[in-house]
Image (cartoon, rainbow, N blue to C red):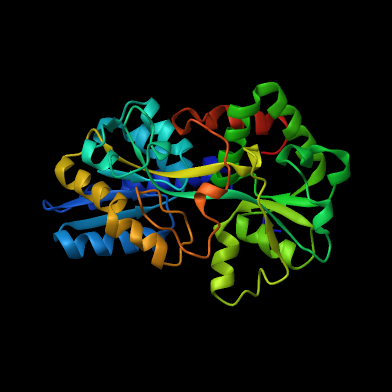
Length: 337
């Protein structure tokens, strides 16, 4: 197994790359710069549709949630970014807590269901993904599936499940556990996880390991399996998904966020981009494309292969208050990072 690259190293490399680029990161006079931590293919499709309709050019810089969030905070008011897109909301909270976002235009907020946007309106959801329990039915009978995510810290799950703790995806899940269960219970669960689980680098690696029978099960986001099934299915043919539901921490739905930087010199164009992504055409890409993430726009339909968002019975979590910093501290304390 390839050891995970330390976050500080990835951040240092990204910082050096961005700073050394200098003016190369400035958009054309008639364009915008998007710092993108979403899947590159999805954002590429959004940009293509937006530019085709509006003629506005978009320069995109890709990176990871935490690294790009930290980059924007470091750059502050001098950031060349006009828009920030993430996979998970804790990175949005990081930038928002530094007061670097401009309020999202009211017309854009109105396009998204209230459940998928923070009340303060400084950023908005652009897509969503569900936590799931992936398992190998040949190794784990359906009757033995865990009732709750918290069960996985118990001694009967030792050596039976995997996850990718170094990634922003799993750290968002831990932040949700923290919000729902409190610090003491979260730390206890993480210590149990440390004793029981096997670490992998990335959700795809977890899926592959479960499929190959190397591990019985794992905790990932739903779209990894759907994406593989839409291709050859070679890394998921021996797997199934279990949805915890019942407002369990394991049913957490993570919001991918979008926001306009207060320092943007192209605010009207940046706001137009966010409005397009959350509007009818932008959300339709989530239905017809191969990202398999959930649409969050009002009356927007998700890919028909997905379990409907309303049926997931996800817990109520205030995405604007997910504390990724504390989650990472607790994971470090438990020996996971």
